[in-house]
Amino acid sequence: MKTIKFKNPGISNIKILLFCFLLGCNTILSSCEKDNVKNNQVQVSLQRVADSVYKEFDEKWNIEKSGVMLYITGPSGTFMASSNITPTPNPDTHFRIASISKTFTAAAIMRLQQDGLLSIDDTLGTYIINNPAYDIPYRSQITIKQLLQHRAGVFDVINNEIPDTVPAPYAGEKYVDYIRSQNESHTFTFDELVGINAEHQLSTSLPDTAFHYSNTGYNILGKIIEIVSGMTYSDYITEKFITPLGLTHTYSVWEGNDVTIRTPYINSHLYIDGNPGIETSEDNMSPHVSEGNIVSTAGDITKWIKLLLTGQAGVNSENVELMTEMQIADDAHGLYGLGLVFNDGIGYGHDGAHLSYVSTLRHNQETGITVLASANFIRIDPSDENDQSFFELAYGIRDACYAATRIYKD
Image: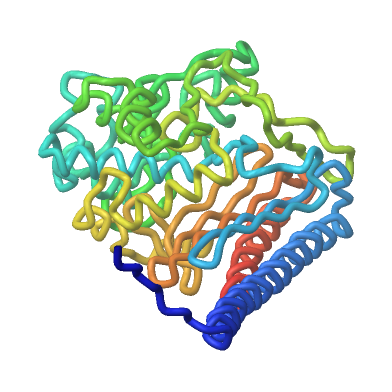
């Protein structure tokens, strides 16, 4: 039998192979070490920003029970930092996202347009028929698009006091405050809130003549979503967005007695002119359905806005592009599109404020970076008619997004 001999590679060849293998390992390890150093630098710098923002407001207002949170994610990884929030939040810790909820409402409208069930150029009377609660001024002229842009001139029942001239017991007060003073767990409805405008013919301006931020305008959008889809607002956004996108820590609150945030959650505090913080995390969110009621987490809400703006949330790129067509708004909102605001450098998203959570959320489509900054407090001084505390905080939180983004990119 013939013996088959294998060629001996030789000791020198084995050494060469071993050297190449070790060189490759060292290159990988070196790269990993560099990545770890970079990641540590980003984390440390992000923590410094969180600490700096907290320190600034604590020195002004003594917010000993509250703090700030930063979350940023993109091509280089995900980082989170917080300062003076106890217990320390993680990506799955719940908080009230407030008006960031409007991005879901706007997306729902665009999804319904995409499915051929409505057109944003139609007037509200096209879909809301024979309901006197919606016989508001200029209803035959107000379009869905104008409602999305806050250019419909709809009086905002949530944020504004009812004029003194109105013949009603709540004249001179905010309607929601008046009702809740009698029944704290009252479940508000779209018909009820919009119906105040219809009953008293309240309006801010002619449609499409000026920007007037209106939560009540978004209540009308919520009603249109329900009529066109045949589902409740909460069921629609859950079925079309929350469940299919795996936003497992996001939910829509609508009942007046559903006041407690699911655990784990970030608590919140209201500071009134130097007094100790008042716990505000429990609240009746039913007046805010469609404009500010949703509870989410840092991980979920940053995922949502990225998916939405990249055409992966169930709204196609064509309709997302319509959402990002900006118009000049006001000093507080800058540029506003269809349920989205824009800031150069950090991108599209929305801000949110509700007792006592203040947040800024943005996604930059060019860099792929998504950033969230939040505070779990609000400070007010009722004795000062020109109190700017809220705006100082809101702009400070937005500036934190810029700082976090610079750190991430560098």
